[in-house]
Image (cartoon, rainbow, N blue to C red; front, side):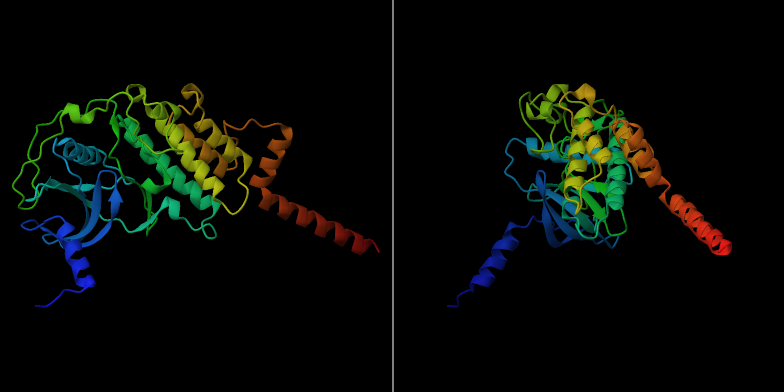
Length: 330
């Protein structure tokens, strides 16, 4: 009788824990990580010959509520076709009953893994503007994210900025009507239909989000009254993170922008993600920002910073000219 080594036993245990994708078009390559309600795997699409990310529900779900929520996330992503949101390719149910959906596999790094020494303030603000653009797009489609944080933003290898993990998103307005058609999932046999309204709603008092990034009203469990301004608060917290992890002290106008976005009173926050992004753009262009009132000295300092190259050239010209005049008068 032969005995298996501890290493062999560990490999068998890991293999037995993997979802069964037999009979589908996908071949599992590696476990990437976990996110929201499921585990994310890197897989190869055998038909199209490309790598995809598979999000699979791996929690016990006797009621079917979690499966409905995962599929609801896939439906939300499918209706948000934007460069800042990962596209969904497929969804279905495996032979072992696990629900999954397939999406584009993005290589890069999360926003909370930025390099303090290499990532400049300009780089971070440009990334933040892209986040604001993506969130503004979702808001225009009647959807709020409810869990915006650095860990849910991916910066791709070619500069892509993607807002991830829409598992707790809230639909503020009804989606365009469509027929509940089955979604093919390779050779998986179970049809997938649009999640029911019951699975789309969250009970009052249930707190969803991440501490430190959720708005006060969200932390209080006021789910029914949440609107786009809750995401504005979270965007302000993300900006605050980007500023406080800099190697240097952040400029006061930017700190003022973050404070305005994170006001406890919803009415005092930015009216939209577009307005927040515009204030960041104004700062980058050397223009005044709405969150930072300026006195005459601040205006002069901002003006000098904006035109510092021209000022240096003019001063250099005047100094050289003065020296030449003094030289020829000797």
